[in-house]
Amino acid sequence: MASKRYAAVGRDCVACGCCVKVCPKGAISVWRGVIARVDSELCIGCGKCERECPAGVITFVQRGSAE
Image 1 (tube, rainbow, N blue to C red):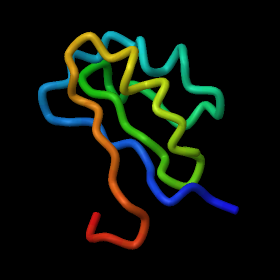
Image 2: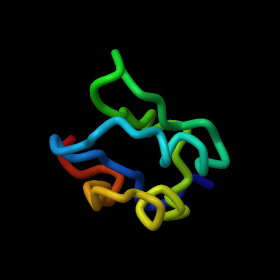
Image 3: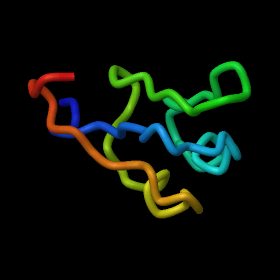
Image 4: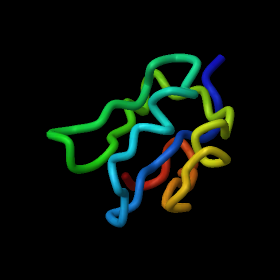
């Protein structure tokens, strides 16, 4: 069963890649060296990326809410 939430990266992302390294499902990638993006279908909502983010720009969105 999928998690009730998934990660979302804010616009102030510095594309450091810390979240990419800790994601156990490979759901996060750095797009064009500018910002991290999350594949909501792969994200399990574990929170590792949120805890690791030095910029503090990762939050969680409830599945089924407006994306």
